[in-house]
Length: 80
Image (cartoon, rainbow, N blue to C red; front, side):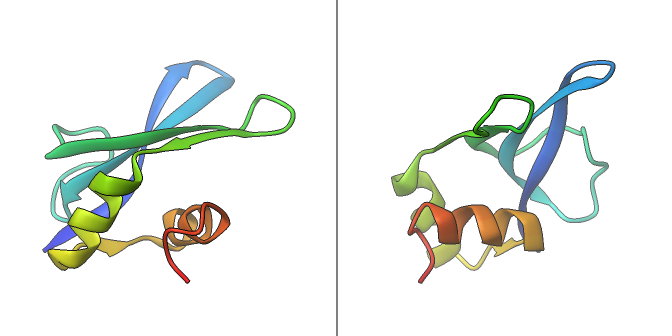
C-alpha cells in the first residue's frame, strides 16, 4: 500500500520535510515513488508548497496520507 508521508531533510536541528508518496514498508528516508511537495516548519510562518495535481492523483489512486500530511492537505484545501 502507498502512503503519502513526510521524509526528513536538512541538517541537524534545522529540519525540513518533503511530502512524498512511498511504499508503507519502506524506511522514513528510503527511496520514494514521487515527490509531491515540501514543508518547512523552521520558518515563521511555516512554508508549505504542494503540487495539488500530483496530490489529488495519488489520493485518487488510493494512497493514504498520514495524520500530519492530512492536516497539511486540509490547510491547502486539497482534502475537504
